[in-house]
Length: 413
Image (cartoon, rainbow, N blue to C red):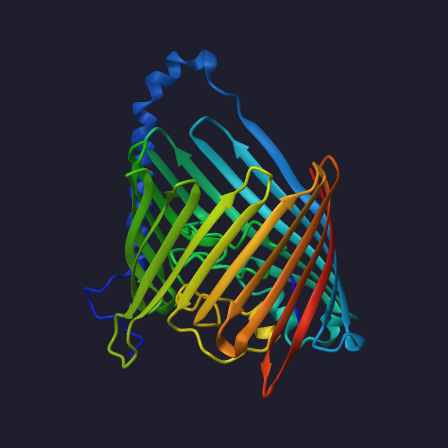
């Protein structure tokens, strides 16, 4: 995680009760697991000679991130350092089961920790139903935090994939904005969190064949108004992958669809979601939609263009801190109503890669410039230079709102 400066509560009987369905899903999962195990006992006995032995793996990385932020005067810059370690544990007792535990350990120190209001609360904010994040140290400009963002048990066979626990449920299709990703909405500016947040959920996937499947996911919230649950159907037609879903999202019914395919040699992806309150309210429904095109040239240049419409967005300019640190939601996926994104990427050599991205919104003619340069120092080592600069109209003048510059060294193991 990086930070930049700069009615009714009771659902009528007969409504969708996420907790009741969660209990039913858990029961079904156990029944399916038991039946599948019983059905495969004889097959496993016959194939005992080729059965995989239990395996345990540990992977992860260590990163150091140096941050310099100013809003807008560089002479008033504040610094912050982050030492970030991730541990990914995976245990496979058999071909059908696997258990996952993944932990983030972060130590922040510097001026931002001392001077940014509520910094420690932002770092320790819970990701799901259960609070699995703890600040161990928060004093003298030092903040140490540990967060479990994956903790799950999974059963798979030829047709079923059942996962219980904290997990990443990625229903999005696009790269920058993903309106279909109702479980794990992420902030694009939080570039240092590649794995993205997880949800405490039960998920059951059933494959009809290689090109169509059902996906049911339920994530209970701390209160009924925070429940999320939906059923998605995947299928393939005309060389396009389609998906459609419906369910509930907090206090709304939600329905959405998306697709991914090609127009000539260019990738074409789109997704949209519609939210409408299920309780009596004056609030009307709203749409969120994104579309993208991407193309890889023969000379190694890769181009991505994407657009977003956010029905709950505004035409005003948010402050930089809100834009880069706000916890976003699927129904309000970005502060602006209309936003255009473009990125060009090129590998100069096997060890050097650069990209230049930008966002534009008519709201105050806001422009965000996002350059990145990556040097693959050695096997499992990478050095990144990243910047985020924000510009818009303020009154009758146009100028910088603030910037953040980052230098990151990463070692993976």
